[in-house]
Image 1 (cartoon, rainbow, N blue to C red):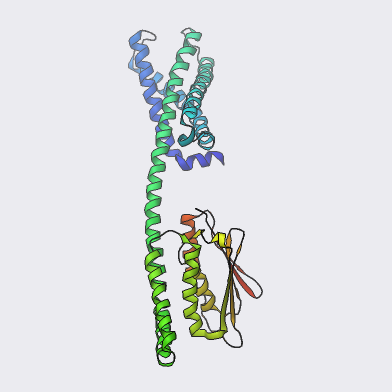
Image 2: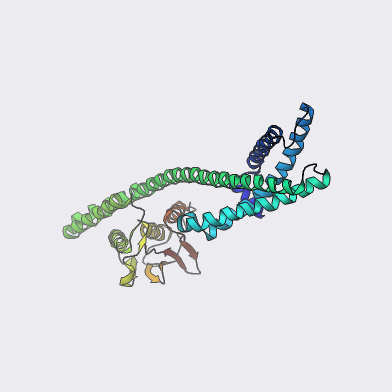
Length: 353
């Protein structure tokens, strides 16, 4: 399981090809150095091929023995000694650990090779030489891994950012489309028409609240978060229009601690919750709809009496999904939606920064 997590960073196939190329290159260097320095002279091409194949195999085994401890070490250091906070300490620890791992693996592999086929050269000299070579190679491997992980992380981050921007654009479009919902506008204009004839003074306020809603939408649609105070002000305008339409059969109450008004949440979060409450439930003289907005610890709680419309089609849940996505972009927590016996409850996390 642990190794599978490492392969999410560096896939096994790519890791194998990388280590194979390193092992092959290292053997070319070693054989060439030994031959031209007189340490071990190659007499024939066949002998060179055999030593290259045998040496590459052992080097590949050694490379894998180096690779996994290196990757585990990098993961450990990422958690405990991140580059951004402890770069100097990490550099020292990583360098010393890379050399130590290289020496240990070099001694183990050299011993194994000696047991399979005794070295003709001085064994101590071979241990020292191989330890130096493998330690240097392991430091190089560590650097390659760090660079690889860094560039992969950068590429994935850029890809994720592009996906998030596309998703955010789509979400903003959906939010804007919902706000410009022709049904809402049509119903509001119908109400306004009636008010103009029966209550011109109230119709003036209706127009002001109506324009305030769409001004807020246009002002905040590009913002990742807004203050709770602004959201509550928007909710007041939105609920005013709804109450004009539904009369005394729709009522809501707000009870929020003043110190929470400066907290943040995604814009139009309350609108999604309030709209769903009104759209999915009966609002009538026989069944008036009650909505409560209050706080609990660091959450904004919205509840409404549960009285589903019998004729309303199955909910698509698009509003909730979009709200969850918008929260996921700015917060580690997401809204919670709970259906009780007679109450529907929504918990919206509040952010301090």
